[in-house]
Length: 569
Figure 1 (cartoon, one colour):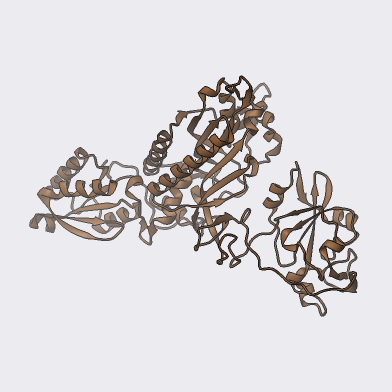
Figure 2 (spheres, one colour; figure 1 turned 90 degrees about the vertical axis):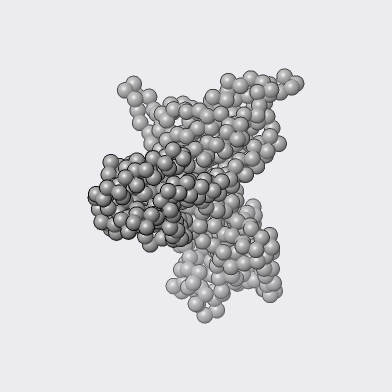
């Protein structure tokens, strides 16, 4: 490809509304353009990178024995209703009607559709199977942001393992785990595997692959000492044992005028620190009032609540509902003597001499013994871990930081196969629901994640395996016949050697060419100029290291090919 003929619309300045590094650079370097909020066009450079990412993923899926499909984007509502997700999923799903009034969804994922395909399997002898595809997904994100990191239309590699039993699922899950490690290494970044919530997908286990980045929206807790990591929606810590002093024989009521928060009670004379307070939250769970108890210093992880309680609807109670249930406003609530269903966080188990609301505005209770005074119906891990808390595995301090999710793998079990009647006969002739796993990687998100990791002030620094071109030949003076002809010879020789090469034959100042090459991020630059030609040399520069070598013109192509092929290996 000659730069003079290529569509590479670089920009001098960062777009005004771009914040993430990848967003700025992919627009500036001419890889993408925004069509509307959360929807982007990939330009030729972006498409070249995208196709290389797809090929890396495809190679690993084929190594697993995967078979590639292409399933529809438009799905009839009936198939989603069978799994229960038509009503369970909110406004994130794009829905439309055809001319006959039929309800249709634009696929945000394909579990139901692949399970429908799998219903054609008949015998255990046809298992195991791995099906996969690269397909567009649609999610009506409430706040699309950060360029390609959070969008409403994107490409996903989604694969599905089909097995006869849980042991087969475990093996497929582990094989996908290792394949994902290899994929992310080829893409040029180290992804952290973390325990995660399965959310709307269902199933009993999931692992997210996370990339540390300030542009991310997910927070994880990670231990550098032992490698433990978990999304804060799932992560735990090993809290130190608290020895409470003996309290009174019964809770004591005391006046707390104007106290409406945990901090207010900490500051109140005769109050208590947050660690010695019981925070009471009221939630509506399938229409019933449920009280959630945590230490005053802790925050609720709603995802842990969702994972721990089987319910169709969970939401915080309104102020009116709280008043009707407990007779007081938020800030004066407690669970002593109430008839509502009470769920307490494990960090409160065994605690005594605590302080909580008295269910009367401007009054609290001190000397509360959890086991004696509160009728706890269930104990769950409800709290979010905090930075510096002891790791649950080795007790070293946890670090909490922002990440971007680049992959997610799920053990689905039989949720979708049961719904779609995807069953096979086992060796005894008994029908068994197929045990499924689901494994996803967002292609364009991976593209942006690579840029988040590999950039500097001058622009992008693509790893060789995914670079749009491996070498750019910068002809300093294309009107100089000797320089132009040398550039053409090098260009032809590199192409013959199997190298992806871009010839910058534009009639531009050298500084413009060099800045553009750095911005676009091509790994190697060959510079041809009159001075070098007079000495019989061209310059080879590494974008990543800045290392510069002078190559003899008659061996420049051979040396460059060897350099690129060595790095490919």
